[in-house]
Every structure is written in structure tokens, then in C-alpha cells.
Image (cartoon, rainbow, N blue to C red; front, side, top):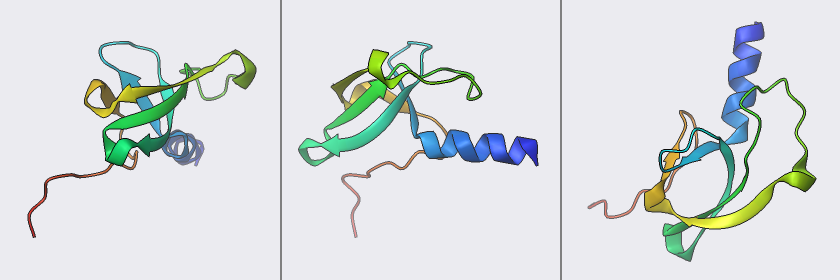
Length: 81
């Protein structure tokens, strides 16, 4: 059950990575019709570590430069009906 709780916390974080950086960020919301994403962080890789939100930065990144972790909600564009 500890493993399940750990995964649940990770999925709730909406973890995202910028380009080839190893530091995770939290994806907050999409902007510009999904062309950019507002992220905050970096957040600790270890979920048990405390998070100091005052030291984190919030900024917008083009969605094409972001890699989302498993379980993060994403927007799909260009799908044909």
C-alpha cells in the first residue's frame, strides 16, 4: 500500500520535465489554446521531501518543449472526428 500511495501522490503532482533537464516541475495549466503550459518548480524528485514553494519559480513554456510524466493530463490537438 505504500507503493500505491507513492504512485497516487506522484500522479496528483502532474509532473513535467523541460527538454532534457532532469529536474521535475509541476504542470499548473495550459495557455494559448494548449500551445504553452505554465509550470512551477523545480519540485523535489523525492516526494517525501518537503517542498518550499517560495523558492520555486512559475513560468510559461511552449508545450512542444515539455515531457509529461505518466498519468499527467494532456490536451490533444488535430484529431479528426
